[in-house]
Length: 505
Image 1 (cartoon, rainbow, N blue to C red):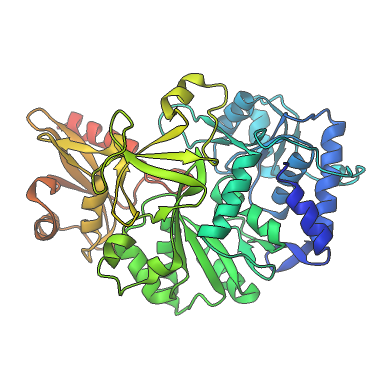
Image 2: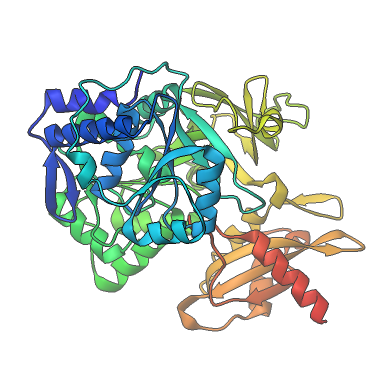
C-alpha cells in the first residue's frame, strides 16, 4: 500500500478541513493539499520520475515541504529528506549516494548545492509544478517497497541510508495511535524540529485523521513562537528533542508563560535526564510522552506513557521516569548478550528489536546491514536493562560505555547525578585513556546561570550519590556542549578535546 493514500482519503472524507498553515495563516484545506500533491506528482512524472526513483527534499520546514513529500509518494517515488542544517557538501553526498532523480530545495539552499557541483535537477519553487495536470490516483506500491530513505547523522564516518518501507511507516503510525497518543481532526501538529527526521514522520498519523499542520514562520524552534502558536490553535502536538523541552521550561518559567494550548509534547532523540523532565512536568503538567526509536526502527521501539511520565505515586516512579517505557505494539524488544541470547530481566546488555518496523537494511550497504540486522533482529548498539514490568532503561550507546579497572561505567548514570547539582546546566561524561585502569571518567560541564564551576563541590556531590570509582577524575568547564544538527551531544568532539589537551601537557 502507498502511504500517500492516507492523504487522498482524508481529502475525500473532509475536503474542507483546514490542512496546511504557515504560522497562523491558512494555506489550504485537505482538498487543496491533495490537489497540490497530485499536480506536483504529475509534474514529477513529466520529468521522468518513475516508481522506485528517489526524490530528495533539502528544504526548511514549510507547507511546501509536506506537498513535496506527498507528491513524491503519489508519483511512486521514495523520498530522501535531508536536514536543512547540513552543509551543502554533506547534502550533495546524500543526493549522490541515493541516486536522487530530482531535488526540491529551499531557495537559500539551492545555491550551495550548485556551488559544490550537484548535477541532479534542482527545483526551488513548486509553482511551475502546480500548473501540471494532477494524477488521478497515487501510484500503487507494495508494502515492502521503499518509501523513505533516511540518512543517519553520521557523527563517525559517512551516514548510512536506512531503507524505510511503506509497511514500516504504516506500522509506526498505527502503533503511535495505539501506544503513544491519540490524534483527532481538531488537533494541530506544530513542526519546530526538522521534518527530515521524527517530526516529519509524525506528519503521517496527523494526515490519517485529517488534523491541522502548522509550520512556524521561523522555520524552526523558537520557544516564544511555539507558545504563541499553541495558544492560537489549541490542542497542539509538538515533537521535541530533550534539549528543546529543557529550553521551553526555562523560557516559560522566566516569562510566566503556561504552555496554554499544548496538549502533547512527544520527546525523543537523546537522553532526557530525570531532573529536567521532573521540572517540566511540575511546571506544564501531564503533557509529556517519551518515545524511543532509531532510524533503523523509526519511533517505534518503546514508549513511556503520559501517565507514567506524570505519575508520582508509584513506589518506583523515579526509576520508571528514567526509563524509555515499554515495548510498542508493533515490535518485540529484548536485552541480549554478545551472542544475541536474551538475558534475564534486570541484567544489562544490548537492546534488540524484532518486528514490522525494523528496516530491511541499509541502502547499498550489505556489510553494514549484516552487522546490524541478524536473523531479523535489529542490534541497536544501545546498552540497557529491562525490569520485571517490561520498562526498558537505556544506559548508553555501547561505544560510549567506559571501562575502568574492569568495571563498566555508563556515562548517563554519572550525568544524571551531576545534573542534580544546582550549579550544573548541562553535562556530558566521556572516558579518557589510562595506562593503569583502562579509562578514567571525565565530565564536561556547562555551569548554570552564568556562574563558575566548583570541581571540589561536584566531586563531593558525586560521592554522596554514586560509587567512588564512577566519580569523574577531572572536570572541564565549557560555555556550551558541542552538538550536531539534531541537538545530540557530540562526544566524539569531546574526546578530541581531551586528546588535544593531553598533547599540550
